[in-house]
Length: 615
Image 1 (spheres, rainbow, N blue to C red):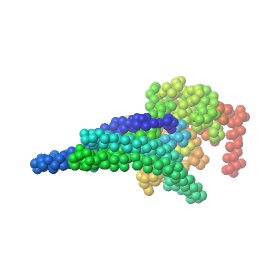
Image 2 (image 1 turned 180 degrees about the vertical axis):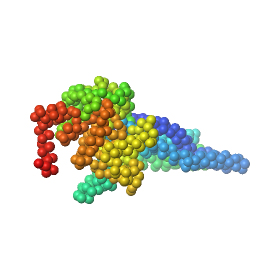
Image 3 (image 1 turned 120 degrees about the horizontal axis):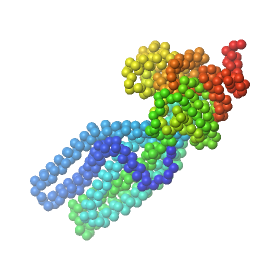
Image 4 (image 1 turned 90 degrees about the vertical axis):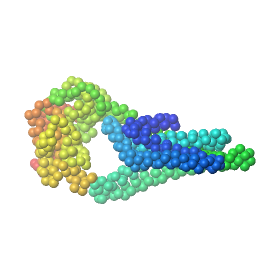
């Protein structure tokens, strides 16, 4: 997902204005009012004051104009300044702060929605995290910065043209004194943009390591491991390495930055201001072709025109620089996932009859060796199937394909005889509930952790509460929840509250099981759900699941485990080894075959009996 294309100033400007278009769609009022405010209050007001008001006032003094004309001139400009001041105060205090926060939210919302739609495979690559972190940093602040830069660019240009027009009326030579040095300075500014960007990109890996250490040290789940080991010393070393890495980047580019800044400074103000002033003095003192009031205009206009032109070119450089940084955001937005989360298609039946794997193979991106090879089997409704095998046999990958978190690289998966790619992906994934080996709980209420947004709009609050009570009972967690002062409304973890509820590993999995039960999908996937449970809690959990699904039509349960005893819970067993189906059948059938299944079953049974002291 990282950008590999070479960029130039023009392409970066295009990217910047693409970003600005998004800002305009999100908040057109902010863009328009920001532009008006910047041009009038930051640029034109000063230009009007120096060129029109001051110069006109001096002309009145030289020509002995009536005092009433002076009063009228002052009154006109006083009204203008009053109106612009009122508008500026309203914009800065009342309008901009609220709209800026709304714009930040809109950009973060766009990014979060996009990230939620990228392929799961993206999370396996460090480049994705670098791109995402860079995009996240830019999404929150870069939008308003770009808007500021665009408004200042246009304001500086308008003001510069205003001053240059006044200068050109008097003598074109003054324009040359301004334009040539500004052009030279601009070239070096463009060089500086590229240097700054390259340095910043080299810092990102170091900053990410330092950020990881900062977060890890503060998280409770790592506290015990850190305090009972020498990890802190290792973390300090990693953090110091990151700090030194950033320092080395700064050291690498400091000479280039110094040289560029020195040349840019020398070719800017000294040439335009001093040469321009000397030329104006010559026109007054030697040739006598300029009046004193004209000199005042020239002295002011030369300085202001140069400053405005340099501001204009600097802001153009800023826009180019913005393009370099927001490229990560645009790349993220332009990323086309292999599995489109908004894919439309057929609506699957809420009571599927069977799932078919037909010669399925799968290889992860960037790997040559396939994880699954020639997988073919069928699961009919009202059946429980056990996928058994050692770690790395391909069990979890197989169910990820079934859930369509990944797409097969060979063969096809069918639901009721139709390739699952033909279904509306959101409707298809509603059919599946899953409990993974390492379930994740969120800093939300217990109720929200169970519901997970999977609420039928037809259900009343009372019906939802009844279902939550039922799934907590069936998952074996009801006793703990009943003892909590907040009940199901208690917040999980202490992330935001000292009264947050902490769960043990086994309770984590029970809550995840309750979550799957609440979703009540026709396909239930249990991926090592009892790995943190003791044998008795494990037995109770499976009995509850069995009772929950007993007598219900069109239910499919897929159980993944490396414990061979779980085969006794299934109607059919599939033994995977090195990504292929080694044996399949019922427990009794496989035991009679005296093959690999029986060998593994007997070994695990003997190991369990020896451990428990059973003879």
